Length: 230
Image (cartoon, rainbow, N blue to C red):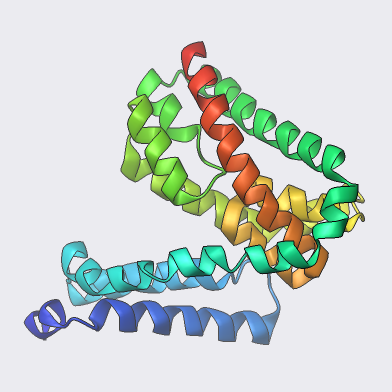
């Protein structure tokens, strides 16, 4: 059985999709934020690999084909942004200020926590790109001398965590403006947060899509500066 699974081209794709579908079903049934489909699928995939004793390389040889869908899926985020173009033009100053504040807060928080826990430089720069998309974050981490694999894990955890508690945090601070909601979710938890923003509404989704791009660019600049602080 193990050899069959290891040699199967579709095992990685199949177990990933099945895990995600189970997560979707649980989310629809119970309506709990903690039952995030991505989080559930990650748990199911890890458990399946451990139980079946399938190594990661064998799993990834099939699952990597799902990654090819990432680029067109990201490009599709431009559609809701285009639909809200007039809203973007009329609020561009507040939007840029909000995203900039979010990026600076993210970088500063990482710096403070690394000082508190006495992290070394490599560990510090590994965490700096935690709130941006994986593709950009991996590049920043590698360029600055971080641990790329941990960076990927941290980015995913940040996104899932933001997706789960994002709406709750917005309620606590009584943030009702749709533009602010979208910018907060996109800046703090990249594409996974944008999924939650799109659930809240079209404007939230469009602003979150914009935040992913702008915060990524600003983090590239900010990380190159903040990396010298520790």
